[in-house]
Amino acid sequence: MASQTEIYDATKEAVVGALGVGEDEVTPEATLMDDLGAESIDLLDILFRIERSTGVKVQASDIGEYIQGGIPDEEFGDDAGVLTDKGFDQLKGAMPQIDDSQRGQLRAEEVINHFTVQNLANLVQQRAGGDSG
Amino acid sequence: MGTPASTRPVVRTGVDIVAVARVARLASEDARALDDVFTPDELAYCRRRGSANEHLAARFAAKEAVLKAFGTGIGRRMRWTDVEIVKERSGRPCVRLHGEVAAWAERSGLTEVDVSLSHAAGLAVAQAVSVWDRPPGGDDALSPD
Image 1 (cartoon, rainbow over the protein chains, first blue to last red):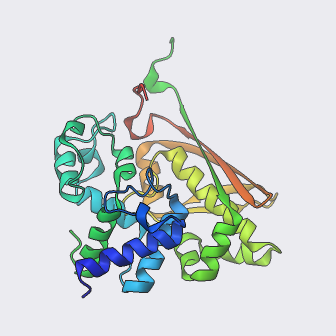
Image 2 (cartoon, one colour; image 1 turned 30 degrees about the horizontal axis):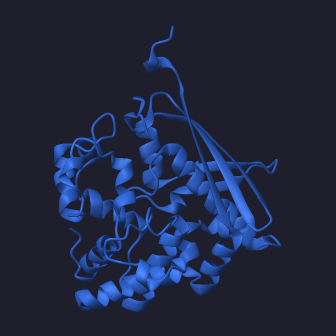
């Protein structure tokens, strides 16, 4: 199994290749959507590049699974779409960079905008280890 | 006003634009990517056309537009192939839902979904309109953002 560093490097290389951005822009904290401007088709490209270089298959829908864990939609967000305490606790496990001040405010549909290069590398690492979370 | 909010149909739209060259690059680098995005019927239809990448790009935009109109994006267990764009006999495109997207839409009260596609000057664009019997995802409250 590839090391964490190898997985991160492969993730970074895939992001640089798919988005055509500079290596210095692709930091662990950079968000794929907001900071680096990735769109859905770019995400698909990134995931295939990662698969080619690491052999680890990650589907776009796996990102949602990684973020939400096994929590049903109706328990992850409330009726207004804001993350519940249970949902927020799960999110903090998957994306620890999310600030606690967002508790009770962050909407489920906004979470993907906070997904970083490091989060993606962690997801690939999880898939590489066969741990579905 | 006048009609209770819970009985009013709710309309949500979604629009997406895709560079044809972006789809062409993805297809040339890894053709398997197409199988993750398009159904066999969609691929067969596009490959029969003279400019397959334009048609593929339009369909990708349409899938994105539908998922934007639903407010979900690619959610858990959803696949791009769950949103299929098919042609009616008249040539008009329509949306066929499958899998988790179909299940989510049914649970959320979808009554109608329609889509329109176009492409020109290297860009493909699609707009989707969805009608619901209640606010999908419970997003009836106005947000300041």
